[in-house]
Image (cartoon, rainbow, N blue to C red):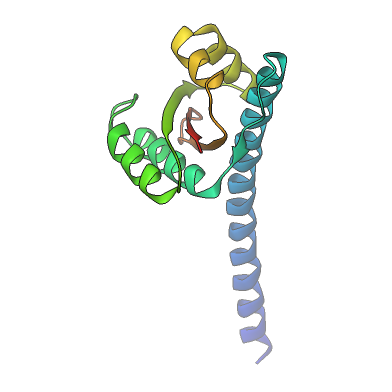
Length: 154
């Protein structure tokens, strides 16, 4: 009887340890996503623009695109943007504009945002007349991060 309890305790401990690692990874990317938004909003403030608000629905769509890029299901870039745009615009009442920034590499949030700001097209999205956003980041096994930020005006 004591032997069975030990095995059960070991399995529970092992399961909790695996759950803890998964939670840390998820929360690590979630913190990074929030940091991207924070840096974008800091930049927007310097331009007297209203801060963007994170919307879980948009984040889910951004995360899905980042995962598809990280897994090689789509090439790095904006493949499938029209589909993402159609889905989001149909689900978010009164939305009237949408844009997207993507990046990949081994960057911190501030580095990604700084690179986007240096790029005229990406900067235009960051400075655009948008009110909502979602940021999705996926870390590939080799440590590369895939970033997607979607902007929506409502």
